[in-house]
Length: 273
Image 1 (cartoon, helix red, strand yellow):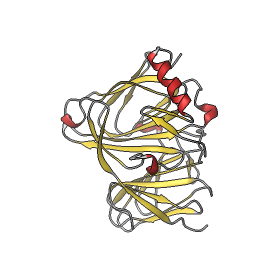
Image 2: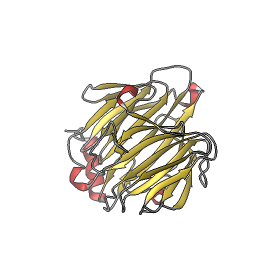
Image 3: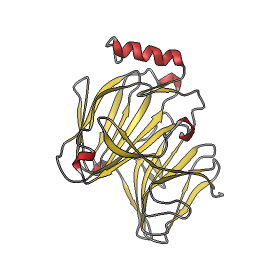
Image 4: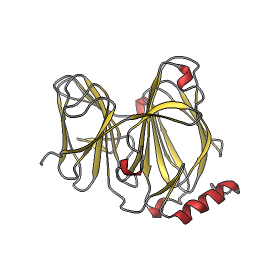
């Protein structure tokens, strides 16, 4: 299988969200920095509680999935149905907002490091109005594969070699890997032709990819990279949806009319009805 080429580098930029949480945004800086089906990737990382303590108070979503991955710290998720989920180091929450959910994500610490990511994954039109649901995963739920060169891969979603991830069979057949490589090591992973893929380096650097930047790959062949130094990166891949994307804040639909309906539903208290 041929190797995919890097077609674009999207360097993350400072941003804030929620009640003022400081973060860095790569995908999703604008409508031109999406990669179907991926809408946005945020990295949050700080030892200063002032950067994250305000958290993400109650807010709505409709029409897509959010994936929160915590490296350090403790967050509590609560939704309008009374469901609660604790996100601790190494844990993941894969939430499908579907027709609507109102939830909050709040820090459960007043000091220390808070570090992790939130990924937004679009849903096809036929699944945008399905009931909301989510899966909370602790660190021990996520398979790890040791590599021959001393690296490792955490298989959050999809498949790596003979190992199935903790999440299988999403609407976009998503792959989500957290890859750790020693300096000079190479890594290869087959991705179905036609699927989109990108790597986000959050520690170290890959050949051609600086730290805290996303590398978008071409659409045919396998992903093959080399670590310039000890490096950790996320590898995301998925089947493109190929439908119009209309986004207004936390609502992602196919038409302006559907966005206007989502706003009316939220104002009327019917978003998740």
